[in-house]
Image: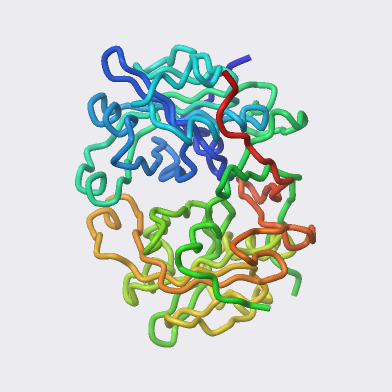
Length: 189
Length: 189
């Protein structure tokens, strides 16, 4: 079930470095693309940064609407992540082509990707200089939600291998997220 | 053995979202801090972004020298990552206190962390407006290297559990990186 994540906990959805799908809408046009280069920028109010290449349809739609969503796909969507990352929405609708369905977002016009395990709805801050120079977008997270099978009570719990986050390398290769590790603070003596 | 990584492959060291240790030097002062919020920004010449809080000693040293290194720690250093992320270099030297040793960098004055598995040596670009507003630093990678037990031929190979990258969540909790997954491109029909 999709549950709300408090804004002060939204950074946790992205903190461990999963690949994302960026969804966007401008007017009747929508698109979905893959982005590995997304990370938190601040805790509360939460902000994120994401790199969106200037040649993409997503860039055009985000530039017009000043909104996007970061959708975090589970391992079972890895094929779709590679597919939507491999061609442009200018060459045909990627939703039906890749068997992806949409969900309505709560606070923005862009759709969310059904079957993802977490969602961050974002509105761009006015930093057009870094957008233009670096393809880098700075945004505030205005709503966050997650699939409670893997994120609840402010924590990830990756019990089902099919629902683990995937972390992109290159050439269609990912790693899934692995086992929990607790670091001890401080040292004796 | 520490081997050079071609600059065009440097983004691969950071692409899957591992936690980093940021090292810095200004004059005789050096420091090491933990940073989860670091990612690639461009391929070649490679660029990165990293968030460095304005209250930290690292911020002061990086602000003065305009250089830093991103060191990628393996699982066996997870305790040290939490320890250096939990207190300030202003309160005493963190190197000896946490049992961390240094290596000389190739192209910058900041030291590297011995026992890490990859290193990106970085020089800041002149983007002082986003530094001041968001604590966000944009830098060019001027040298990259890796431990050939886990990265060689342009690929990660995490065979030894002690040498896997760790991906930070919060409160001293990480996940290690998990298993490789290959996404298939395209769909029939």
